[in-house]
Amino acid sequence: MTEEQEYLVSILQNAVNLVYQEERFLLRFAQGDREGLEQAFVFRTGVHLSNLLNQTQYATLDLDSEYNKNHGSAKTSRRFPNGLRPDLIIHRRDSNEENKLVAEFKGWWNNDIDSDIRKLEDLTDSNDNYHYLIGVFVQIGRTESNYRHFINGIELP
Image 1 (cartoon, rainbow, N blue to C red):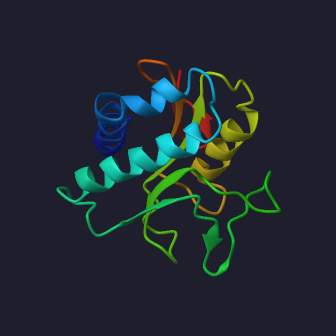
Image 2 (cartoon, rainbow, N blue to C red):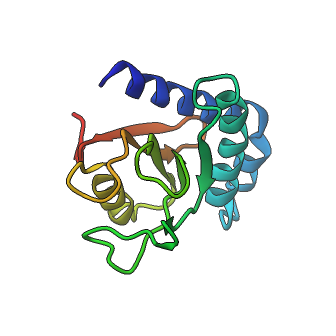
Image 3 (spheres, rainbow, N blue to C red):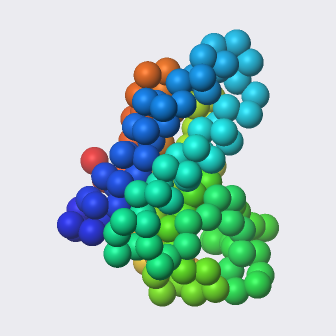
């Protein structure tokens, strides 16, 4: 990983850790009814990430959740010709020149991750439309998250 990629991963991990520290009620509700937890977790991560980004060189970029647009059209890729919506992205809207980070989240209770992995592969692929600098899969755990990283369409070992 480059220094910039490592930095983007660390700032995302810091935001996720803040959710665990400050938003424990989300995880308590998850013990029984998990409906909506993933979306709430992503939203809270985005709130913390926005605050962290405001103190960095990325403050002028956009942070979006479920953003499905590409220059006014649907965001598509080779394996998602009908469109896709990444959970969180750091980018500049209406441009593919500053696509920095794309993240997909999945809770420990949901093993259906194939679509998320394919999204991260496509969105970081330098031969596809978007070439995000780094993709991160966040597996939401009960007490901490696990991470998988994607660069140039390939998962890092």
